[in-house]
Length: 321
View 1 (tube, helix red, strand yellow):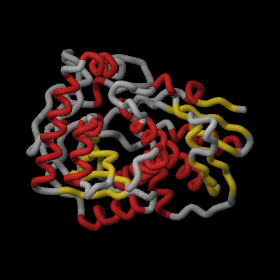
View 2: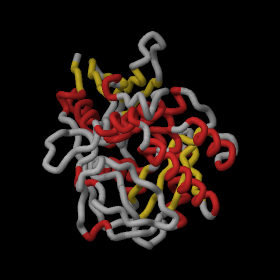
View 3: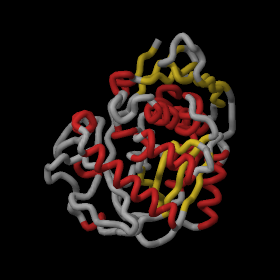
């Protein structure tokens, strides 16, 4: 049993997170995994309420569920189990046995293969039936994936650009984000490696601004694999509520969507800059989400780029009771 739990935690560290900060830690005790928020990895300037941190931890929680199910164990999950310990976000007890279906197996295979995309996509559109399937994947976790088009796409692109420019002029934000940009040759197991984005951004139409992890250096990949310029499918991930439980649910829905998409050759880029500005997030909620709460702005598409991922070793994130 312990080996299965350790393997599930090893899988969980591959979940997506803001700046690849990996803002989580885990405890294994008996037949249970505890998922905790790591306050030392909380980006307080860009994420003052901890919303994005909990979305990241929710994605890790779904990854644990998937890994356990693929191992033939039934995960019994309790979210926010103890109000006196707010850092403990969830407990997962391994019960069973459980026969893993083909969808679980497919998603489990993508856990370590999935990569965040930071450029344009190829011109091949995401198939309509796959879009419908991704919408259902989000619904299964209590969230909504809402594809947007036309004027809404242009509005989101403009808001992303405005937020990126505002943040670039904010000294506190810049100092915080510098922490997560990794120079070429870095051996760190967190942050964004220099090879994970293009050295020169090729504009899409409309263009969604990327975060600047090079901070004035000539970092990034100059390979031709980043010559794709399609925007891809733009979508919003939303929830009805906007509390801590909703953020964790959004993270689980996000990872479920990402793994299902990856199993069908579709990658995702994230653009959360506008959601980190309170007034812009409120505008998006009222004008584009029918009053629901936007938790993630993402683009989905096909790309030849393989991406480059790094993660911290298990001893840095796991305590065993």
